[in-house]
Image (tube, rainbow, N blue to C red; front, side):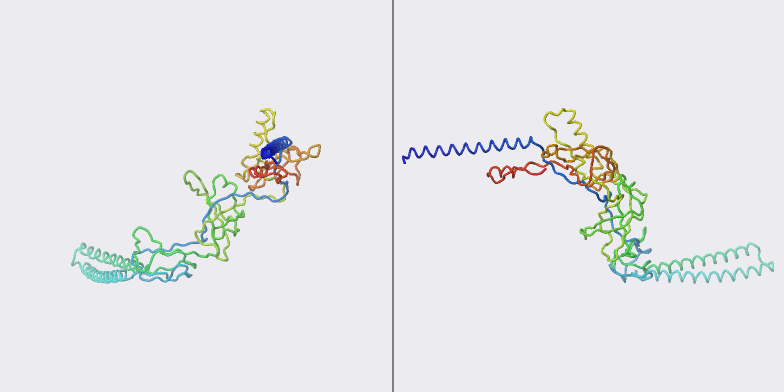
Length: 424
């Protein structure tokens, strides 16, 4: 074959191949556009019946029900420790001892003062008796008798003061031994042997004792917007970072009135009691608390995404209809739909049910206007169907789904286009 003719043939085939690829691209474009015009594709979820639990979230701190801080009423140097971290102690058991030397010296000094006062009382008593006899014989003036009586009474008062000082010194000596006030376990110790305890203005804490670690409590701080939903006796679930997969069950035992204000945020303490037989919970753990404030069982419910969905605007629709659709969608995405206020009620929200059109092929949207109840953040209770119908099993629209190009393996270009599309 002539080389020139061979080149013309190859060029002709190349032109035909390019025209074929362009034709395929044009066909795919029009097929895609026709598919878009033919109808939207939607993500749906079936309406069902089930339980809904409305809850309030908070954080708290785990602690023992009874925790006692043991301090010292006198200053001194710690000479002995008889308890350490995690020690089991009994009521009346000695925990630590301060150096008693200065306190023993104070007792001896006060004892000497008492002895001296006793001698002075005895001497004043004898003087008063002598002056009393002389006055009876008329040998001394009445003023001298009165002076002797005053000296005797003053000596007796001084003796009482010395005895009180002695008792105080003995009491301080007794304070050098620190005893446990309750049965429990030592969870904290602040001082070591040789350290000086200064109790001049306040009693320093030497030990912290938890009475019973099998019974714990959580103090959760609940926001003022949710505190009205919290009641004594409501069930509570919480987790701690040490056991992220484990959920502890408890109940509210007290809702306190002393509010806390932190950066203009007002919270109220809620006390939650929980059993701890395995000693898994430890003091000062941070608890992520879920307080169940309401529960309904076996009710009709819709997914929250269905309350937020609104149909896309169609070509040729009037602006007023589009504004109305946006208004309905905004109403469906209210606070109750998002789970912000679990106890709130919304009226007249709209969901869209995907139903077959009259020809049985194309899908059409059917509106159902409903009144809603409580939500758990994922599903919302349907209290009443205001207009339309809504039954268990009906597919309610939760969002739009992008079209998938059929016959994905027909060309590499089609595959690349499919990879560029995803779900909303």
